[in-house]
Length: 174
Image (cartoon, rainbow, N blue to C red; front, top):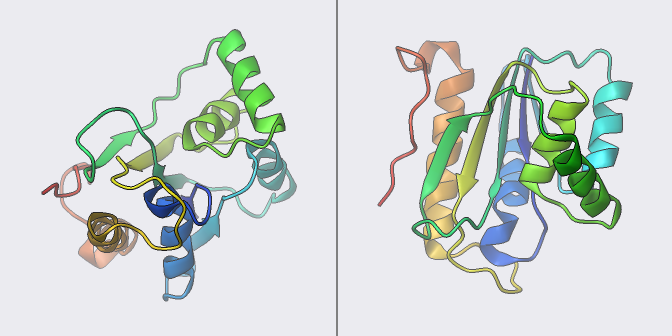
């Protein structure tokens, strides 16, 4: 099975990228082995979801969200999540943040990795946000990137349209 999960808050413009992505994708048809989830909730609860879903043994996961890292706003970055054991102090910091209600793609990945909940083939898709204020709409650029990201995910999970090679590429940036 393949898990595709959007991570983020709602109603925060481009910071809602992951939640909007999951909502759009849930209204689309996907192969039976694709599970689309909105992980716009706490990482500890999501960890419990993984533990309580023995039927959901994922061979692959794709997590998407907006992360401000000081890069070019509006660009999409994709990368393989490296399965290394995070520093215990970093894990403790992330768990503390999660317990206070922080919803973060990075927190989720670090916590889930620590508790061995992630499949070895995990891809991360990050939007560098353009707009970060209150609002139910993505920026114009965020909306374009959302459409491109959905197309990329479709190509990744539909074997007939999967790219050749390792299948990893950066989504087109403009």
